Image (cartoon, rainbow, N blue to C red; front, side, top):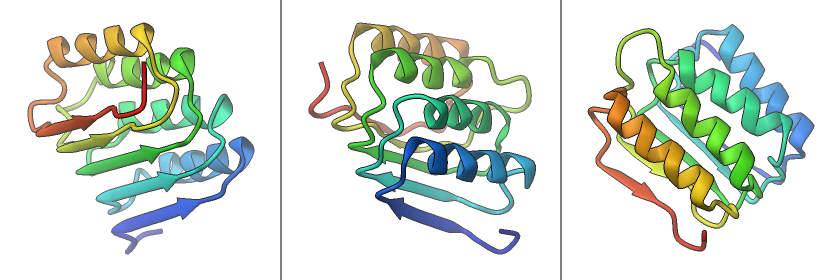
Length: 131
């Protein structure tokens, strides 16, 4: 993981996604700059583990969770993790959350993360196909 700068995974179960997120958390995110998950089932454990990773990681420039079946509740938890960052502000520039069943809870959490000032580098958020 030490020299890995981009990770692109699809077709993972919730349990496998959580394991990947926990491994990256233990490795301090290593040097991963771009993290892309597409068409996965991240409806529970994985979304929570990704939230913990986002709260502590300071290397991600791009996070894509396209079509990962996150849902509104888990999506809100994931986004609230960004607002709870305790270290330096996130360098995250691009956040792709298309087609995840997000709704008003996630939207409110996104607003909270933006208001907290923990995403000063954010250039774009993609939410197509969500409520």
